[in-house]
Image (cartoon, rainbow, N blue to C red; front, side, top):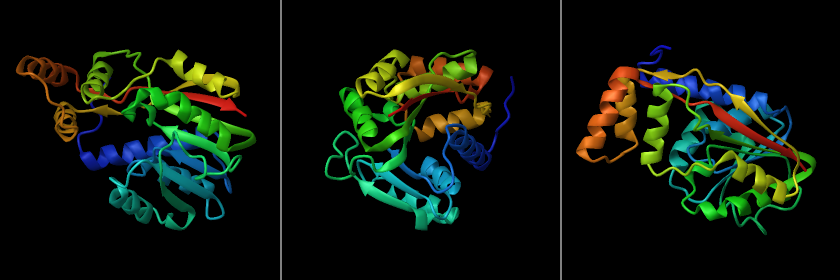
Length: 240
C-alpha cells in the first residue's frame, strides 16, 4: 500500500497508461475497426486509436457533445484525429446509425456506470452485439465494487455518491447471454493507481459530490488516513 500519485498531471498520465494497457489486453490490434460506446472525454478512444494505427478506424459514440471540446483535444494531443469519427447518438438506439456487423470489436470503458437510465443497459449490450462482425468481440470494462482495502472503499464511495450506477456482474453477464454472445468470461484488471489524500480530496471536489456535514467529515477522515485507490476493473467479453 502507498500513496504513489500526488500530482494531477501524473494521475492523468497513469490513467492513460492504464487504458493503453487495457486496450492491448482485451485484444485490440492494428488495422481493426472498433466502436467505443460512451466515449465521454475520449481518453479510452485515444488509447484505441493509438493501437489500431493509421490504417485502423475508431467510431466513438456519445449521447451528447458535452465533452466534445475535451474529446477533440485528447485526439489532437496524441495525433490520432485522422482515424477517429465521433457520432452523437444514443447507444441504446443505433439502428440506422451504425449498420449490422460493422466493427471487428465493440468496447466500452466505465460507460455503464454513467447511465442515467439503467434499464437501457440490456438494449445497449444488444446493440453492441448487433454491430460487431461474425466472430467479433464485445468487451465491457467496469469498476469492481469488490474492494480489498479502505483506499478502494473511498474511491467507490466517491463514485456512488456522485450518482454512478454499479451493476452486479451477473446482470452484465445475463445481458450478454440474452444478446446471444458466446464464450462469455470475466477477467480482473489491476490498476495500482494510488491517490495521495490531498489529490483524492481534489478529485472529490472535481466530482462535485455533495455530502451532509457528517458524511463529509466521515469520508474526509477516511481519505486523510488511507487516500484513495483506483479500484480494479472487471472486463466482460463475449464473441458473436
